Length: 333
Image 1 (cartoon, helix red, strand yellow):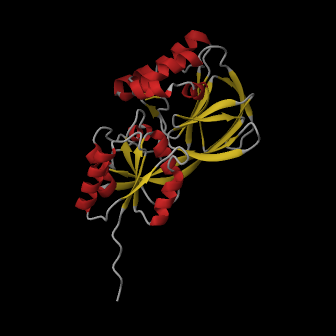
Image 2 (image 1 turned 90 degrees about the vertical axis):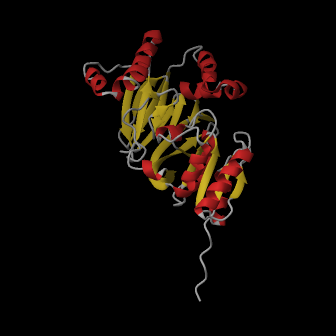
Image 3 (image 1 turned 135 degrees about the vertical axis):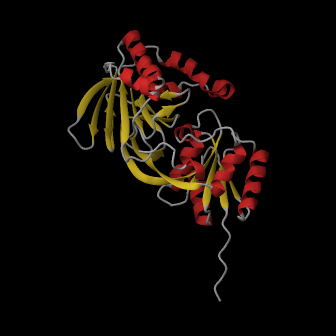
């Protein structure tokens, strides 16, 4: 006699600092019951484990979907645990960034809807970025990222962000961090190798390696980036003084953020010149070695100083739950 198949269950990996646990439990219990799933299991993150190890534990326990409830750091850690597992991640947006949810055009302020998607949505495969970071003492560690990795000024800005201020005013806290990070000379020479080609040298302020293209405040930094195309979109920012920063602002905020979104705007863009302050590249793998140790960030979280970084695309390595009625109109390559 064939044994009955065990009912499916969801695992909720949550950051207790970022979520309203009572409201989250109510929403998850209601959606699981409506979908006919078993009682969900709960896994709390900690400073020692921001989500990767307990996500792997949830996989071993037999979870059919993992709900990531927290900020971008929680989502990134859960994705690292789910890499190449075939178990989908469901995003429950929280915190100030919600970078992946924004790039997938998911709703940010509807908890019941986001939870329902975990149980009734469709699976969508996307790429993961993988990085190997070499430290000043010669050790190396490996992590994944979903949206962007950065070395140089942007990582320095994130490292300089006051966490208390960020909790109070959100992304406005970066204004204070930018002011402090821009003091002094931030120009940096790096050597890089793209897709195994000959090493090249470039003078920059920061280099960003993108799996997705959009940042908060409607900033479209990498307009050609797609989450499932198997390649990185990379940009090196190298402004020369105040005028250079103005050129970058015009290019990113005005051209990418406004003109590119309409047919008329795209025609106007055809008449504009590329600026030397931004250098765009594409590739599946990049190795970057700065002339001296630099701050490094993944998806908006600082990861300390690096003397070298190797990043490559793990194509379609993560499954994400998306609303069934939106799967055909979400951004894709």
